[in-house]
Length: 68
Image 1 (cartoon, rainbow, N blue to C red):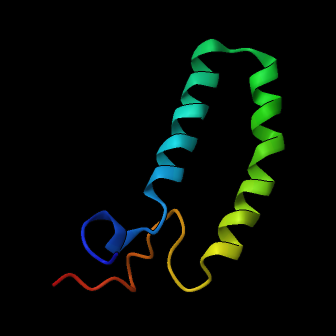
Image 2: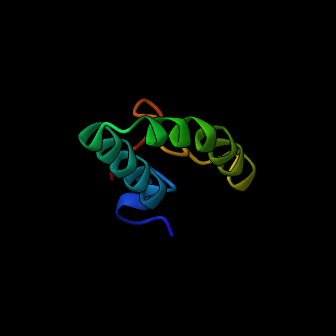
């Protein structure tokens, strides 16, 4: 898939889920959620690194992107 959002970023669902979890943690303000986020971020990032090594993972590389 190289069209739409997938042209800019390879894992938009992971990014949106991560932002949603952080937003919920900030809204609920429960220490257990902050600990859970801290525990899940490193393995999640390692999973993304192993899945895709050549495509921008979560944050697009704006300078390398060509708009056509």
